Amino acid sequence: MFQQTVYSFKAFKQAIEDYSDKAERYEGDVCKVPQSVNLTFTEGAFIFLVPAVLFMMPKALASGEFAWFVTDFAFYAVFSAIISTALARVMFAASGTMLAQTAMGRINQVMNAPVMEICEHPQAPKDNSIEFKDVGFTYEGAERPALSHVSFRVEPGQTVALVGPSGGGKTTAASLIPRFWDVDEGQVLVGGVDVRQADPHVLMDQVAFVFQNSRLFKASILDNVRSSRPDATREEVMAALAAAQCGDIIKKLPNGVDTVIGSGGTYLSGGEQQRVALARAILKNAPIVVLDEATAFADPENEVLIQKAFAELTKGRTVIIIAHRLSTVVDADRIVVLDEGKVAETGTHDELVRKGGLYSEMWTDYNRAVAWKISAKEAM
Image: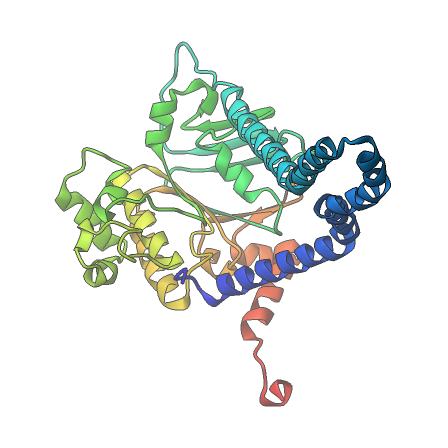
């Protein structure tokens, strides 16, 4: 249904089962008794009128006020029948009010977000180098910093990989380069210029990025790729798609590059979306490329094609690549290992393996995982 790999289906299935278990526990353990009591009193309110009628009817007959008694009884009988409906409407109104308050809270959160400060006299980057100088950064509301005293340098044309355990700060570090956030301490330099001192438009033109959860717009393939450079010609878009190994994708679509994604049952798998996102980055032709787990949702066939697209995208550019699949970073000019927001070690693949530190352990575990398979005996 979602054109995803088996891992995505497994996560989706697990999410459904977790939600089902929580809903059943909430319904049985929390709501059963209060809801039973509520329904008993609201739906059965008419029962309470029976003793009142039996007690008051003889007196009404004796006093000659039976007509008034019948009128009062009819009113309360009708009123008791609509109590549950009225309460339901009150609850729905309260629920709607809560949803509206939540929506307004999100809108206010966006409207109250701090505006990016723009330098009055911006400086232009001198080259394609990247440098982190004693960088510290903490997400709003977090108890510990995501990055602490991080320092490393990427020379123009180099490929540097950021690896490490999950939550080590790899994606955070990459996100500071195009200034998605501003550092709390230290500096992030692009071309020798602090990103806070650069014109945001110039900075964004310098950097192309492909994230692990790249999403496409509900538009044609042509417009999706062209979004990175709106003035690009159709021929330039086609060349970028070819460089990103998207030929098979275009062939299977009913209208080729003019096919609108998300319409008429036309959807792409995670790996195919990544290749289109890579075409977008290739078309942008930025001198700095940030790749954040760009093969995370790709099956083996798509991963091979994505690797070929990488070779085209990274040619002659400064590259920051984040990967958990260590086989993809073996040939990097340098590897920076991040652990708990700090630089644990740096060096080439061979140097780090010989050093016997965290990277060496990760490499050993990775190879063990790759070589692992279920034997016939274990399957039984």
